[in-house]
Length: 437
Image 1 (cartoon, rainbow, N blue to C red):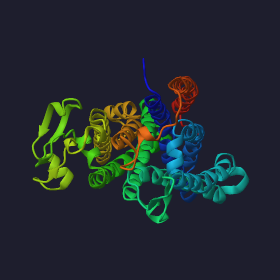
Image 2: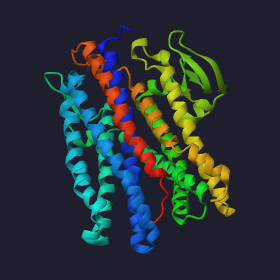
Image 3: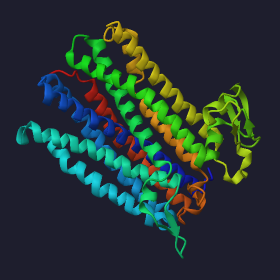
């Protein structure tokens, strides 16, 4: 296959970030879950919460370690494959990523050992503080990384110096750029939902084996509460994020919706196949005017189509259209599980409804699927820009030979599947262990 260096560099970044995303999402959710479990043990004295804390802290440690390792690889690619981007955007994104290390990673690393091994040495009060600091560290890490990526989506607060670099003119505007608050909330809720379904699926698995285990019942109950509460919030946050995207990145929304023509009273295309060459969505299944209602909150609102932009400025609608639907479909499935659990909880049948338990086991990775699909929507929808509207991806790559990028991509694939496959297998083994005292 004759693939150019730019395409290979993009594939490598997509491959590594897809692996990397899994572990920070789990770490963010599990860190908060561990803080809640230890807090419940600290304030109630019920030892079952401590047993659950010990059960999940091992899994958290593995996920955290794999997230750190895969994150280091991500940063190296900026120098090897994207040196022009690093040169031009480095004065803005470099300090932000440095702040992430100084504030978040140091905080997490400083208290992680205490959280994992220090309960008998420092006592319950300081140990609980350490767990809270680790949870806070994961939030701060998400804060800075989402700020960096959001600036690339909706750049603000910058100036361009005499050599063509983006330099900060207003750090507050850089950090709190127009899409950042929406994307931060959306990502945090996604991490909590992803973790809830992993925890819920694990609890359901053990309830299918033995419905009397108190730890499994608590695990499953807490996860279902999270699904019932957070899934509706995520839908609201997603709608607000979509409206923000429509304002600042309308071409991305046109690709997400599969619209090539500008419509007043645009339909909602449920399914279809956006054809970039023919500039139309084939086999479209539509609901009249619902697209305008969702996007503009007006039955007759105008939604711009991709033909409003030159071909070279359009994202790949085929990929964005379907990744967006995978994300939305996963979100609706999680909402349905949450509502189902509420109905069964009201009838006092939460722990003995076999079909809910089996469905929870089957859908335990659905939050991770939604996170990856959402990230594909975000990143592919930003194309053809690395910094939206300002710096094209094709102008951001290093002057490197395709064979070198292809070799490193092949090496990454082999190592990632071996190392992270083994790590994921070990995490699954830990989850398969019965949560007894």
